[in-house]
Each structure stands twice: as C-alpha cells, then as structure tokens.
Image (cartoon, rainbow, N blue to C red; front, side, top):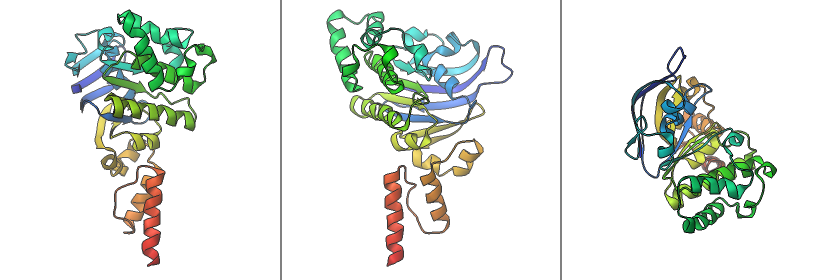
Length: 283
C-alpha cells in the first residue's frame, strides 16, 4: 500500500510547489492511472512514491509518504526498490546492460537473490512479459516496445509488490502501447502487483485502469473509479485533459436523453451503446 498524507514538494531553487497538499491512498492490488497536462506534477508524484524525492531530487518536502509502511524520507530509494519497482519514460537511460539477460541479471545480483533462484526468476520474468526469445538479444537491437518489455521484465524479476511507471508508452506506436498495457494487466490480475501508471493515452487508461487520479497545477483534483472521473468532464477539460471520444459521445447522448447508462470505457462497449440506441429508435 502507498499512503500519501499532506504532501507538498518544492524542488530546490524552484519558485513554487511542484506538489501541493496531496492526500492519496493506493491499496494493494489497485491499478491506478495518473493523468494531467504537462507540468501538472505527475512525474514528481511518482518520485515521491519511489523515494527519488527527496533523496535524489532535493527540495522542500512536507507531509508523509509511506510504501508498505516504510517512510520514504527515512528509507533510501535502494531499500524502497525492494517494494516498488520503477519504469521511466526515457527507457534508454534506465537500461544498464548491453544484453537483455544481463539487464535482468544485474538487478537480481544487486539485490542479493540466491544463485539457485536467479534462473527461475529470470525465466518467469521473461515468460510473463512475453520476451523469452529476446533473452540473448542486445539492447541496442531492440525496438522501443521490446525495450519497454525488457525494462518491465527486469523489474518483475525482483518481484516488487508495486510498480510505478512514468509514461512507458510515450514513444511507442498504438500496437506496442497496447501490448505493454496487456502485460501490466496480467501482472495486476494474475500476480496481484499494484500498478501506478502515469500516461497520456487516456483511452487505454480508461480501458485498463480501475481508478484515475487527475493532477492539475501540482494538486490532486479528482480521484476515483474511471467512470466517476469521466462523469466530471468539465473539470477534466479545465485541467487540460483530453476526454475519450466515446465518453464525449455518451455525454451528448445523455444530454439529449437518448442514453441513460454508464459511460463506455472502450470502443466495444461504445458500439453496444450505439446499437442499443438505434434498436430502440427502430421500434
């Protein structure tokens, strides 16, 4: 569990808070998407979760953040990494080895995993991310999507209970982006890993996440089940968040009293919504 209470943070030399008065609880097994416009504080919030703020990014840190009961101010990121694994947007800066196998091995050895367990963990991580065939490939030869999968595999091998990812699909095409989301869904549903995901591709978030947290100007302005957050369309627009077209369509149909159900979270459910309306109109 991640518990954030009264968190405010200002980078050293900054003129204003990057985060202000954040209160947030992320329960075990949750899949939380974090959205907001550029500069809203999304990345800084992840730094507070994995301890990079205030240990690496120095500044004025007020409030409390605990990860599985560990105060992030009192524990270094290296210790917190046993509980929360991080994947960053700039994936090349995160890769430390030249071969996929060595990238995974580096973390396992660094964490002191027993030698007789390393092979099993490596195989499990490669299989769960669907990249067993990439084991001996050089990192430089991988596509962007493959690099993201390799980075996720390296974290999965360490078996943290929480994964925090900062726009991992930012440089990926739609197909590769969906594949990354499918991997995260599998880790969440089959292995109970808590997923915290900063992402601009709100349509994918709405399809895969259970809850959405909306950031604006360093503040958490909305947080709740995806459908409830999408119902606050005006606040999302004010925060500079692009609303999925299926949600906009559902809102307009509601305004015309043609539709009274929940906002669809994917194209399939939007199709069912429209077909139902057309069917009623034909009667």
